[in-house]
Image 1: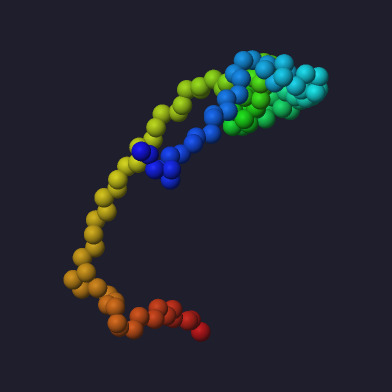
Image 2: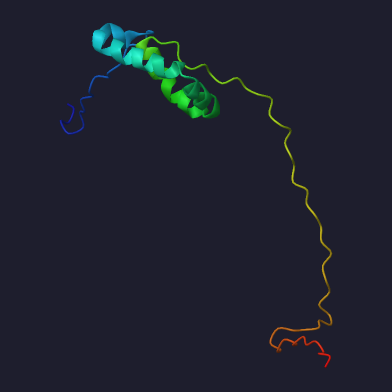
Length: 117
């Protein structure tokens, strides 16, 4: 016999339709109004420049365009990346501290210039 405390009831999964333009079919003329506004916005030259410069904006708009049935912003084409630059390790010669001019704990020498008078 199963204990009532261990039995869990799962909520049914909600799954949205995946067809192109499904939101217009479900909501009708209200979604068409938003679709037309978005199409007009995407047709403007400034928006085309923005989508080319900021690929993440296109990634955000693509699912919405698919839901509304719009041919949305194209996926950015991969441009040949510049060659990788590898860091070069530079070896520096260590300075011997056998007879340093100044040692920690001593007062630092004061550099003076002779004034001609």
